Amino acid sequence: MNARSTIRRVKLILPALTEATSPYWRPIKYSLFPPLGLATLAAYLDPDLEISLQDEHVEELDLNDRPDLVIIQVYITNAYRAYQIADHYRRRGAYVLLGGLHVTSLPDEAAPHADTIFMGPGEHTFPQFLRDFAAGVPQRRYQSSVRTLEGLPPIRRDLIQRHRYLVPNSIVVSRGCPHHCTFCYKDAFFEGGRSFYTQLVDDALAEIARLPGRHLYFLDDHLFGSPRFARDLFRGMRGMGRVFQGAATVDSILRDDLIEEAAAAGLRSLFVGFETLSSSGLEGAGKRQNLGRSYREVVRRLDSLGIMINGSFVFGLDGDDRDVFARTVDWAVQAGITTATFHILTPYPGTALFAEMAARDRIATRNWDLYDTRHVVYRPSSLTPEELKRGYDWSYESFYRWSSIWKAASTHQSAKHRLKHFFYSVGWKKFERAWDLVIRIKQLSQMRPLLEAVLAPVAGSPADGAQKGLPNGPMEPALLKISPPGTSAPS
Ligand code: B12
Ligand code: SF4
Image (tube, rainbow, N blue to C red; front, side):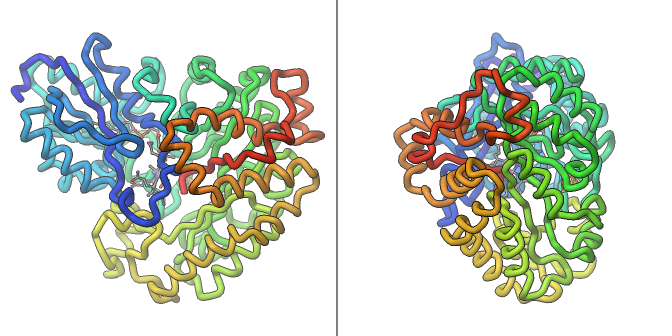
C-alpha cells in the first residue's frame, strides 16, 4: 500500500501462540485477559476509522478481509504465527506494523515481515508514526525513548469483546519494574529510556472508575514498585468496593504497611516471585530484593490479611539439583501457598541471561515456539534436560494433587480462608472440562460473580474490617459449593 493513501480500515491482531495446538493448551488460561496493549494503541487512532481488534486466543481470525493498516503484537511464543499473518496481509496490499516484546528483542528478525517495526512501549512512537504516515513519510523503525503515561487517551475498551474473557477488567497503571533480574524481559524492552514509571494517581483512579463490575486484575509487573504511588492509589481506591489481584515482590510485602493499605483497598490475591529457596540461585539471577528475606514471614503477613498467594518458582537455575523439585513443592504446600506457577528457566533473547548463556554456548535451540517456560531450551548446569523437564512436570502434578491442596488449605488460621483456598485452587486446576464447556457455550462472563465471591474478604481480617459496610457481601457458602472459578497470574 502506498504510504500516502488514506487509511479507512484498521485491524489490530494478537496472534495465538503456537502452543494453541499442543496438548498443554488450556483454553481457560488464554481466555483470562483481553489484549490490553492493542486496545491502548487503538486509542491513538481516529475514532471515525473502521477499527477491529481480534485476539486469536479466543476467536478464529478472519483473514479474508482487506484492512489498509494492520497492527500486530508479537510475543516470543507467537512470533512465527505473527510473521505468517503479517506476510499474508502484506501480500494483500496492507501496510503492516509489528511491535511488542519480541520485536524489541530481535528487530532484524521481525523487520522483513513488516513495513514498519517498533521497539519498546508504543505510547510515544505509535502516534509519531501516525503523524509521519499521514504526511507520507513513515519510518521503517521506531525506537521508543520518551517514557511517560501522562495524558494518555482512554484505552479503547469498547473494542474488547468482554464476554469472551473471565477477567475483562485487566489494567496496568505502571510500566516496567525498578529491579533488574537477569532472566527478566524488562531491561531489554525498556532500553533507551526509563524502565519504571507510573501513571498519575488521579488518571489511574479515573481508569478504574470507568471499569464496570467489581473485580480488577492489575497486570503491572510490580504494583508496589513505587511505594508512594501505590499508597496513594490504594487510599484512593478505598470505598470503591473493588476486589482485585496483582503482583508484587517479596521485599515490598515486608517493607512497611503498604500491604495493609492494599488489603483495605480490596487486594485479595497476590502473585509473588519467590523463584527459588536457594540464596545462591537468587544471587545468580540478580534477584537481590529477595535475598535474606523470610519467605515464611511473607506468607504469614499475607495470610493474616486474608490475601491468597500465587507463588512463582523457577527451576533450572545454576546449582539446582535433583532435589530442588521436592524441596520447593514441600515448602509451598507446607507454607499454604494457594496456587503455584512453576517455570523452567528460559533465557529470553535480549536478556542478560541469554547473552551469558549464548557466550558459553549453552543455548540448545532457537526455536522460539519452545520458549514458553515449559520446555528446556538451554543446557542446565547440574541436571540433564530430561531431569529438569521431568522434575517440572512432577512439581505441577504433585502440588495440585488433592492431598496437597487439602494440606496447603489446612494451614490457614480462618475456616473461611481454608475454604477459599480450596475452591480457588481446585477451580483453577481441577475443572478443566467444565471451563472448556463454559467457554464453548460463551458463558464465561456468568462465572465472574463466582470469582468475586471467592475473592470476598476473610471474616475477621483487617481487609474485612476496612470494607465493612461496603456493597461487598459475605461469601455465599452455597456459591462455594458449586463454584470452580479461579484465576491466577499468567502460568
Ligand atoms: C497478560 C499476560 C499474559 C496473558 C495474555 C496476553 C494478553 N492477552 O495480552 C496470558 C495469560 C495468555 C499470558 C501467557 C503467557 N505469557 Co504473558 N504476560 C502477560 C502480562 C502480565 C501483561 C501483558 C500486558 O497486558 N501488558 C500491558 C500492555 C499495556 O503492554 P504490552 O502488552 O507490552 O503492549 C505495549 C508494548 O508492548 C507495545 N506494543 C505491543 N505490540 C505492539 C505493536 C505495535 C505495532 C506497536 C507500535 C507497539 C506495540 O505497545 C503497547 C503499549 O505500550 C505480561 C507482563 C507485562 N507486564 O507486560 C506477561 C508476559 C508478556 N508474558 C510472558 C510469557 C513468557 C508468557 C508465557 C509464555 C508464559 C507461560 N509459561 O505460559 C505465556 C504465553 C504467551 C503467548 N500468548 O505467547 C512474558 C513474555 C516474554 C517475552 N519475551 O515474550 C511476559 C513479559 C512476562 C514476563 N515477565 O516474562 N501472558
Ligand atoms: S522483580 Fe519481576 S518484573 Fe522486576 S525485574 Fe525481577 S522478574 Fe522482572
